[in-house]
Image 1 (cartoon, rainbow, N blue to C red):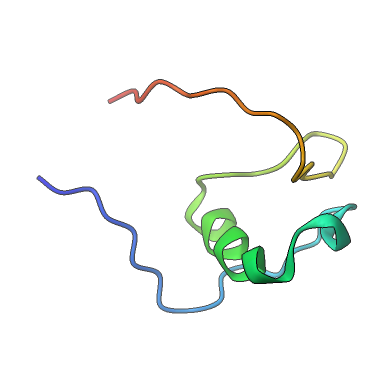
Image 2 (image 1 turned 135 degrees about the horizontal axis):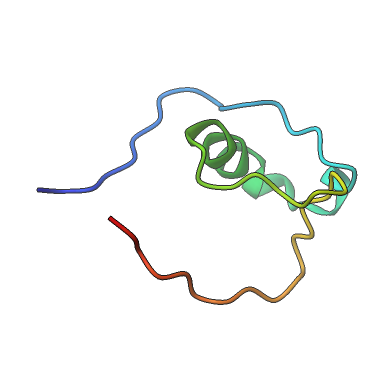
Amino acid sequence: MRYTLKPQDDGKALTFTDTTNISSWAHKAVGQALQAGIINGYEDGSFRPNAQITRARWQQ
C-alpha cells in the first residue's frame, strides 16, 4: 500500500498569528497540510515556522 498526498487545491487559508513569518513559497504546502490534518499549529494560534522540530514516530 502506498501512502501519498496529492492535494489538488490550495488548502485552508492560513490564520496563524505568525503567518507573515512563513515563507511565501511554503504557504500552499502549509495550507494543504493543515487541510489534510497533518499539522494544526500550537495552542496559542501560532505556527512557529522557525522552531526546531523532532521526528515523529508513525502510528498505525
